[in-house]
Length: 589
Image (tube, rainbow, N blue to C red; front, side, top):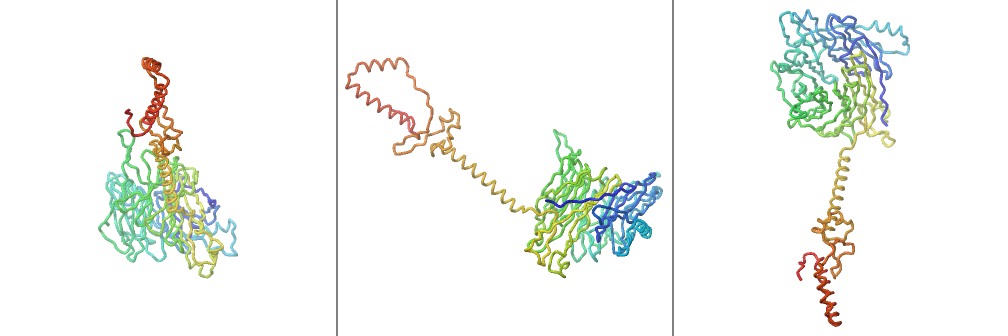
């Protein structure tokens, strides 16, 4: 039985659009949103939430932003330590500034963590409120990295920072980020080096899209090499592209962009076409594989598509979402890491998909030691009615699997604390929900493994042995084919008189076909037909003249002649009978 998934919910004072977990501590969740510029009663804010308890979410830090500027549209934690974190956010400048051609859309903030609890600390509400007031927040920088467009005629540029994606956080390793425009005359992607105060000099590369194109989603994969290279993927809705950049190299020319997959044109009923399915989101699974969230035209449903970026983007597998999901809204994937022992190199991915019916579906995907060999997408569970209004974003907490060093002080694997994964989701209804998903060791712990220094890998659900299942399925299909073939062969040999009629296959044929095709089974030296053979020949009827002539001739014979004639007639009938029923003989007398 699957472990229970617990959840906690909080309602804030504004709609929420962006969220990210602290990469060092999944007990803190940063969320942002707002009502935008000039909307009375709905402010703009960034809130740090405490999600350490499974059944409760509380506010830790609340940053009230200016109501003369836009709401928070994208958000990510750039750096964190024991005392504070630095967050990057996408916030448009005011309309007045944008009319002047100035839009400092990328902001950075520093938020202090609450002091650590001590044995003498008092947890009453008064003390908690006092601590909340003592925590400091600071706006560090604001900068414009996009190329500005001047609409002219006193009009306002409606473009904004739609996407913000950072590379995975690693200790003492550089990180890069990518931002993309929304509602711009020509889309643009800017890759930059992550720092507490990003500046224009930190820009690594720029990708200019065609007129009317926008990046629907972006993901970044660390290639883990000495050159500090990263692989970036983005989709324009109908096509997926990738390119490589290095954190230590900056170039004025755009990197080489490669198209790896294109959405096929789907045909509708009749001669009309419905158009192309559109990709809503994408996530890397490996340097050569991507998981895509694809929506069918005309709200015709959604599905997950696993694509290989080699061989011109071949589709490895598809998984259709539930029928009630007309549109997929968001996607996130978390790698649960490798294990040691017999499962070395194997790993499991957990994917979460938010649907238009306010539900979230969880899937697992197993990968063997071969980075290009995946199992099938397995549906784990469906979280229904998560929010009262449309979901805007989902994100997993950062997960670091336990290493062998965590148990070096003891030979027992029981020192490893329970492993969990958290899933946060936001909505237009001002709500934030955090689900706590328990993980389990694989192979399962037992008395035989107690004391082993090998740390098992952790999974959401035990992987299905796809090779064994495929082998069993192939064997079952082969047995069915063999059985049907034997049945047909036996029936045919019976019909052609080669074997005794165990099945009675000749009786399956219509009478006309049976008379032309079927032959009796002959056995014994005398060549007599099998007793069960019943060809049902038509009754022989002689004409009246022939019967009268026979009677006349018979009347003129004496007794001796009659006996001779009787024996001769009997022999003739016997030869006729044998000739009529023996295969291959002519009926000439």
